[in-house]
Structure formats: C-alpha cells, structure tokens
Length: 110
Image 1 (spheres, one colour):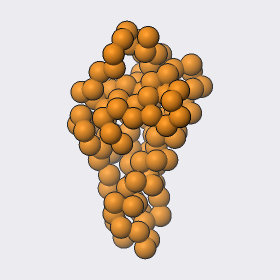
Image 2 (cartoon, one colour):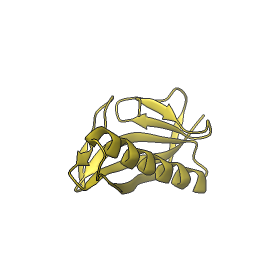
Image 3 (spheres, one colour):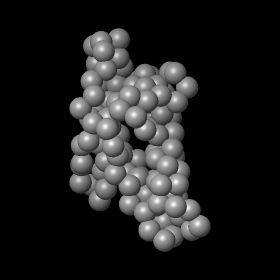
Image 4 (tube, rainbow, N blue to C red):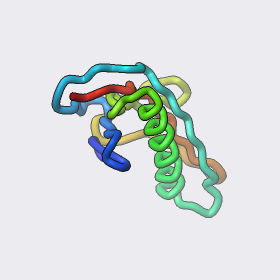
C-alpha cells in the first residue's frame, strides 16, 4: 500500500503521518483488522501482500458500513502494539503463515 491508496475510488487509505486534504471527521476510531494467509510455497513478499490486501478489504467494508469515505491514521498493530510509519506497513511472515494487523480511524473527508 502506498501512503495514500484506494481500492475503488470510494474509500481512500492514509497511513499515519499522511493527512488527507480537507476537513477530516472521525466517524469510528480505532478500527482493527488482523488478517493471516497461508504462506506455504509463497515468498514472504507474496504472503504479506495477500494478507495486506485482505486487511484493506476488511477496512474498506467497515468504512462503507458506517458511511466513511476514508481510513485515516493507519498504523501496524501487531500484538496490539501500534507502529506508525508514513510509507510502510508491518508484516510477519513465516514458513506457513503471513499476517498483517492494522488499526485506523474510519473517517469522512470533505
């Protein structure tokens, strides 16, 4: 995921440290997702990308459910420890499982 990303144009994603233009109103703070994928026969990068995709889709659905058009202040949230980075996410990959945990605010940007 880049520092500002989007899936279908309706919900945008902002890693912590990247502020969207406009007025941001947090609709639902601290939305958390923790996604895992089968890493068997995948490189660490492939496993991490699969897990990230799943986590982003979950946050996208959660945002749409509450009428938000952005997920802001996204941080990695491995074992409930927040790690903010404006350009990267944290992934843990092993021989059998890769996982990405994210926390962010479901927001409206106007």
